[in-house]
Image (tube, rainbow, N blue to C red; front, top):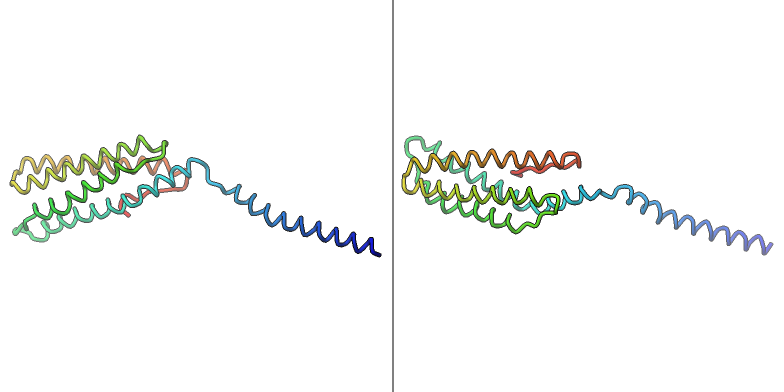
Length: 178
């Protein structure tokens, strides 16, 4: 009898060990099955670094639209735009460019990120030119700067389209104006 009790105790102990091993092994195996690949990790890492900039970019777009709405809504009585543009829109555009230059993109996105930094730098410069043209009432400079701003907006849209096409297979998407 004592032998069978000892055998049952040994068997019970072995079952508990197997049970506990399974409790540890199954989650570990499941976790290893769902580990993201390196491309997904790099894309997610880049998105997390861009997230604050995207919010600031959305704020910048809102401020530009607000200025345009002021002109449109005032009709014949155009409000003084130069102080608001150069005091609100331009500093925000310059800050966005400055902050973007501090983001270190993962290797897979470094070249594309450099293009975005350059694009946002050129946009900040053009927004400054628009403000100066409005302040000096220089219609030719304003028209040229406005044309450049429109071209940069399209270039920015293409940049985000390119990024989203690259990360779409990973099930990811970036909204440039969250």
